Length: 114
Image 1 (tube, rainbow, N blue to C red):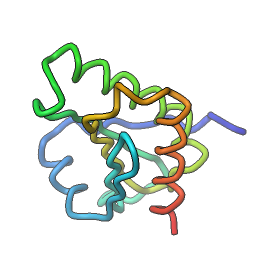
Image 2 (cartoon, helix red, strand yellow):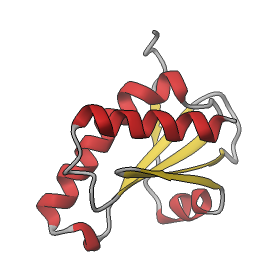
Image 3 (cartoon, rainbow, N blue to C red):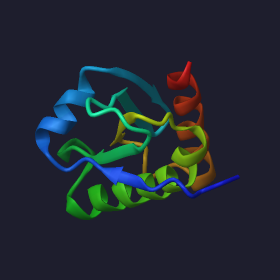
Image 4 (spheres, one colour):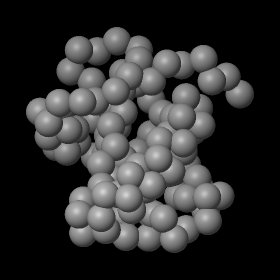
């Protein structure tokens, strides 16, 4: 398993809104949105978000940290080059065991790759 792919970051609101118009999959504790990168290339860009519905700042930041860890581990292997991804935390993101959360991310990425 090669983790040599450097993940780029989505930072601007317009980038998140662009990815929102693509495909998505919601499984367990995560929603993953995916869309072709408009600039092309063979890199993967990723962004993370959590709404106030899931809790205060501490809860949201913990959820995003967990999603970042999953993305860093799984996107190089299961992500598609030339695509942008947005990981959205759900209510159960922090309550799930980390291995279960990784399984959710892996399943969603495999489905989106079809």
